[in-house]
Image (tube, rainbow, N blue to C red; front, side, top):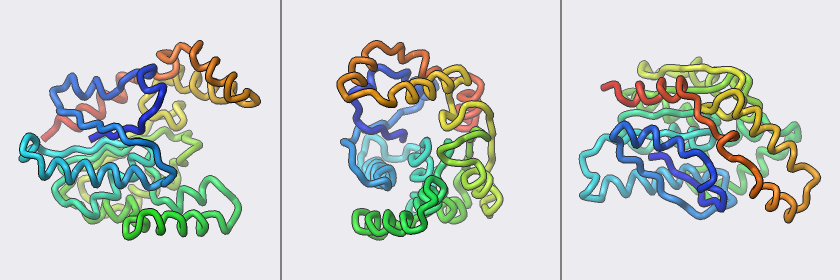
Length: 238
């Protein structure tokens, strides 16, 4: 399961899930409308797993989750609910919502403010953490992958923290470097993507839309073959 958020520009990006599809996996990637909740990735996975359990076309299939950033967090967090997930690949996963917000702001009351909103919108799921899922699902094989220079979800509060506090014997770690938060991309592509976002500063909405239409998206979304091979090899192993 590798869920996506609906985007006008999805068809202009390189589909990294095609690599997984080529390995004869059934890729479940439902497109969901965008929501303001930062915990939305959790609800997407809960919905998708519940659907697979009930649908006769998929009954009996082994379920493996792949997620990046908040998607990586959600793939780990839902292990607190489901005990039949065979494998999880979490790319640069946020450890918890509160830890992630704390890493991005120095204003002390902001994490509490956001958590109040999340509890209202997500109810009992609002306090789930990646570490809780990792330590509860001791029979699930888990691979954490992250770039050491990730500025968005710092390695120290993410993969390093999770691996050092894990009691799951089936957890393994792969690190890369120089690709920032774009864990599976090439270094050149990550640099191009960073430069692209910097170039948007100061532009009006209309200018941004026009500029996007002129961008060669393949240069911004090139998947690193070595990193993807490590992921698919992990998914392939029994």
